[in-house]
Image (tube, rainbow, N blue to C red):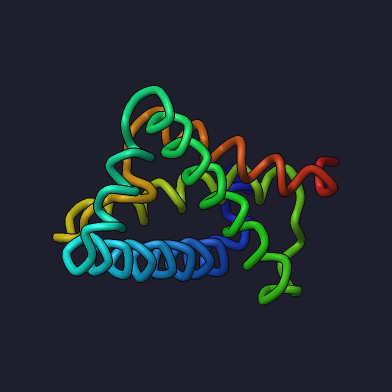
Length: 133
């Protein structure tokens, strides 16, 4: 229990919030593109048809995890990144994805689902591979 208290929860929640805010901004931009341009709408319809749609969705979720670790590396140098902090980042990202799901924003990139959380996990540990100790 002591180890859970010693994790940098505040910094991890901030990183999760920043990452989710970036995703929301990108989704709003994509949503505006869909409503304003027939070409963008047709391109997204093509990209999100099966089986390519599943691959795109999982890659976007993995990229969400990669972005979170990148932000943690670049803007939070005081945080010791190790296996424990990477594992703690996962529920923080899941929490912010849940909060995002409560907003009326279309989920073009990442949403809260089991497959997406697993893809976020893959992205976090793929980018965080140098910190496995």
